Length: 524
Image (cartoon, rainbow, N blue to C red; front, side, top):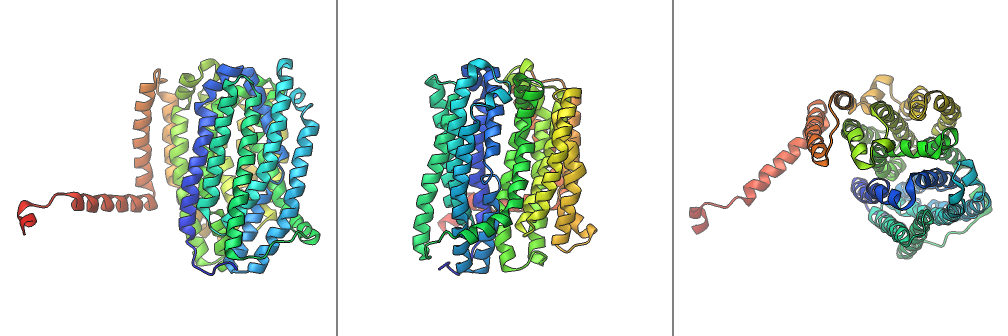
């Protein structure tokens, strides 16, 4: 039976966030710090081909990018309501779809692997190596389906440490395998080896953890039933469609740019976007760490309850000020960083940086609103919104790439996200919370003043200041920008001022306790 003990959703969210950032730190090593090493071993053309082909494989992971989200929402709601029987039924229903998903991803990868290098205009010399890398990546993606479904079970129980620490270990193992394989001289295949090790190790570790927890809780074994799996698939198919389209929008740029221009242009866009991709990656754990907790809270109360509104208002404010600091730093320093990092010939300029920054903000806004609406129980709204968005964005991206060059891809993302997604998702959120427009704006706009001010200052710095020519000058400028942005955030956000006051009081009391007592008092 599920234990009827009180669960700290806030504590679980904090653990999710901290360990999630640890996992994404591994991703930053992979996407930023180790890129010069990758370019030294395989060259920019081969690296661009891998980026494009790897994104195609990502699109094959249908259940990976959608199914686990709806499973987490349903399991967490059942756990919050204390419904053990429903919980076990939901797990059993998901097992059948997971097995089918593994077969689907593996089969599609094997069938399409000979064709993908030609789709992305990969050099003929890299075709055979890319095929092997794609097959290994597909097997790793299939194993990751199993891992993420079990991750959903642990998240529903609010056992954040067990699931996130396991994924962190598998990420480290995958990155280590990639580096070792590169040094052994197998080229692009090394990325496939890393994906294979990451997926399989995560699956093995999470199977062991969930089995032990299941036995400890004395739950009956879940049964795979066709009727339950079919019902779950019908319920989750809109979310699967939503995540497919979001993956196509966010990860498919390299494929489209490579096809419309060439792999080198895809690599330049990817490298110029890398800092902002890292910012989005660091923002996603904030909402992701709270997703199961919101669904759990909805299971206990209702979406329009005062408790839910209070939690969402604080969450939106935290995301807003985090975006202000991250995107502000990125916009101000990206061009100088990129030219020191990989050289000016492999990196875009200020105009491309600003457009990518705006596109990253727009996509992040849609992602946050869509995740929250889904956690509240509205499945179909975000799904159809994403489908409409991608239906407009893909042809618009192709047209703008052919007409404007590389800048067309982020420009299309920014335009469609703001024109299609943002207003509709806000409307859905307002309806789920049963709020008037002014009340909903108060909830979602807590960090908006700081975000606007920080981005304005950062864009001005990128346009007016000379480029940093040394790493020391870049670090010094980064320190100055950090001080300016933090000051703006504290001045414009009441929540940040309260937190700063609490930190100040804590440090003051700590200094008083640590201060040595006078000699006379010690003698007494």
